[in-house]
Amino acid sequence: MVVAAAACGVLLTSCGSGDGSSGKNDGADAGRKGAGGAGSDRGRAADLKRIPEVGDRLQSKIPKDSRQVVAVYGEDEDSAKSTVVLYTKSGKADATWEKKRSWPAHNGKKGWTTDHHENDKRSPVGVFTLTDAGGVLAGPDAKLPYTKSDSMQAPHYWPKTHWHDFDYVIAIDYNRAKGTPPNDPTRPQGQAKGAASGCTWTMAVARRAA
Image (cartoon, rainbow, N blue to C red; front, side, top):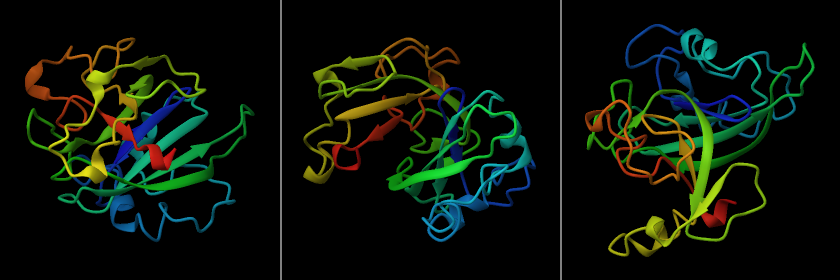
């Protein structure tokens, strides 16, 4: 699972025990329950003291001043299928999380991992901030810094159904330099640790999902 937090953030969650223990299952019953649990539209209005199905270790990494969390619930460790859920809360001291919306999505081609490396085709599990956006299309009315560039165009040897995957992109701050475009190649932890999904971009928001 990916969790993005801060003023806005992403929480990448996988499948597993959800009890916050270390290891590949850390923080993630969410994946298995993505279709009918936290990732579903049921319980939309419920007040939540915690982000659902996220273990203690990942939960503790969400910045205390966060007002938005984008949680990505993976269907299975080796599956690309996932569900993205937006949670928000007010600035009140006793405020709880509220589920606002969910979308079908995908992780890396081979699923997710707690030990991501270059070309493993998996998404990293963790809590990451969202600070920069970009895409092929002109910027939408959003608060994140936005870079428009044709260089983010999805390769046309991909199936046509994915040609618009990078119309809008939000960079997940995993092994990247904040304040740069989503496709900036800088890797502070070294090239071997890869990017957020094993490729140049980190989190794509398809035009049809906007």
